[in-house]
Length: 269
Length: 340
Image (tube, rainbow over all chains, first blue to last red; front, side):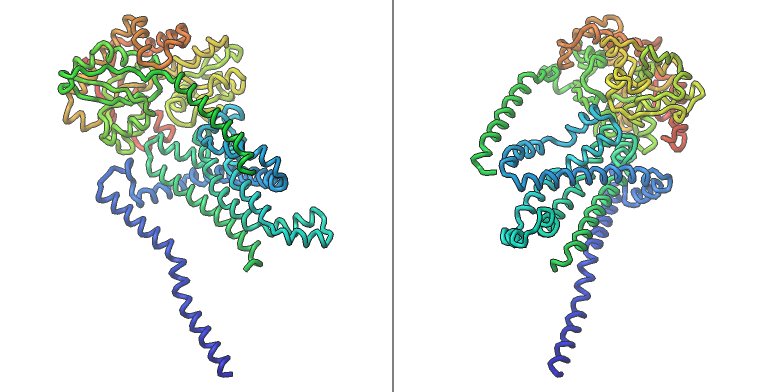
């Protein structure tokens, strides 16, 4: 009883000690952001640069409010979000399918992979005008551009994930007379999902770049269009608003995949 | 993939890359010539980098003539062309990093609305160059015919957008009365493929390209319906205050180049071949038509002079479109002080 009491009291003490550390860990990013905002405000005030060169956080915040109030920010954000989600879904599915196939077939991988790798050297800004010419300036070119950017990280991670499944586990499934579908759904997917979701996290953040590049080249809506508009009208505060909204969008997408990862892979802990 | 199996494709890619790179080097045009300063004159010359707002083009012939015939040098200026995007040029002038830029009138008002102290000091294009272009078979021969039509436009911003709005307004229409299709700078391809009923372009560019391709077109120049402040020379308030003589000299040299170009386009074309990479190998007939069409935009009883009505109309248009939230003091936005 004394030992139990001692263990109970020591665990409650360790819980109490852990709490301040948890708070500090959770609030560190916010502290860093706050410090950054203070430094930015100081730079804007002390440099006395005009707003079209360096708007202050206050001016950017005011522009953010006006962009929300007139509907331009939300409308353009939803347009980019649509492009990102569709591009991400198409790119990830295509990459997953091809990645699985390449993971299973080394000779096909040897045939195709060098060209896939070489294609990554072509910057998105070079492809975007071609896609607009071939597919038009509508959503299709934006979806495809997003999908192309998402494709490679998901493809590579799929291949790595599938090949990381232990041979002994595959042997176990064979000994249990599991069908290919059962092996796929009950072994390969769960076993490779940490790596798969890691690739998806990268793809999700990169897909935002794809959407914006497409919008820069030719679009009448989206955050890239909004940033272009700010540039055209010398409204640097609006450019900042567009950029920060893009950052928040990318963080939200990353966080969503991370949440899925936590929910799906909780059993690993 | 084993290392050995990767050697072939990688070597092939390297060879292809080297081949393409060498082709690129062979085909790369010589950089535009700029007159080399005579050593004894260098110290007296003011070196100016001038953002042109577009790629090297026959439309810049008056500038090339002014440089090539030494008019700028005679005014103590050594000019370096910089084919920077128009907005960036205006922003650099507004920030005080450069003394001059070439830009369209609406850029000055939009910039001044954001606090950039830029001033328009010479009206080069006397007529707004934007036009709506349609295939002749569409029978679009007046702005009123555009109602309900699908119009391709580079973007929902800039001179094309503003010019279209002003033209529609002159016919009692609004942008909402047409269907706008954002097409980037693909007007020729879009119209040729009949993707849109009409496209917005420049009167001295797309129509000539289309006709050269055998496509019969009708052109509705914005300038036929409304006067808007167009391309000119921009400086900043600091330069005006501290060195107005530089502005006067710059204007004078350019106007000499413009005068020579108007009098002898063929000679101006020949000079431009030194400054526009690839111009010598282009279709001379089409390029000369572009120059002639541009000359029609430049011609005026008093070259360089800014029309106050054109500025008023530009401001009214921008206010109506919501691109300006309040009227500006136009007397600070442009000046004819330096025009002889």
